[in-house]
Image (tube, rainbow, N blue to C red; front, side):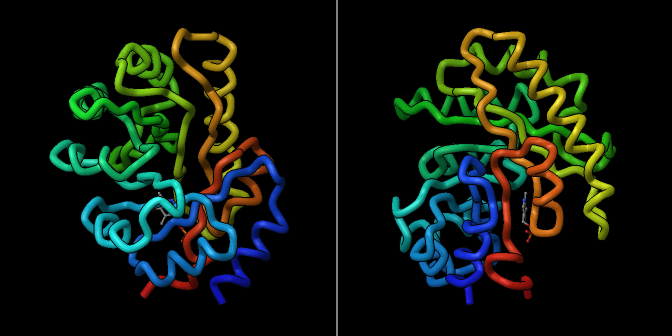
Length: 217
Ligand SMILES: *Cc1c(COP(=O)(O)O)cnc(C)c1O
């Protein structure tokens, strides 16, 4: 089941779009099955859950952190993750930088954009992204590689389009500005119900859970 799902998705997305298997609540067995079928990136939302899956899966895939990262989890997170999609404050970036420098690592990060400008959601408002990118790019333990957004969640994926468009515009604007140490390479947006629209609007990294592993319990 998981294998068929992965193969079907990989056949149907453009070759330059990177697929992240969003693995929250899934066990190592399920994740290994997805990797066998061609998954190269595993996305996790919780550090503790990731640790137990990681123990069994190891470096058979790249590990991306896609949840909300608490500062007290950063030390453990930088041991596992190659990329953190959800940097949305100078404080969090500073903590990641500190822990990376302590362990002689450089971690790739995306800046999370609160494209829906929703009070209760994480991410920075689109207009605040360039200055955060500029500040974070000065930290030697971090490499800024793009932007991520969730956008408000709708049943109808078409409703997500304006939020994806706005995020892509910020992405392009920062890319054109040519900030030193900033590579606007990855635009991470689109989930199981919205990934087609996201790709149409410029996503080159999509995060799929349900479509790969089935409904979560
Ligand atoms: C769970 C999750 C996804 C995947 O959601 P599905 O609807 O199951 O595809 C993508 N991104 C993030 C940040 C998530 O937490």
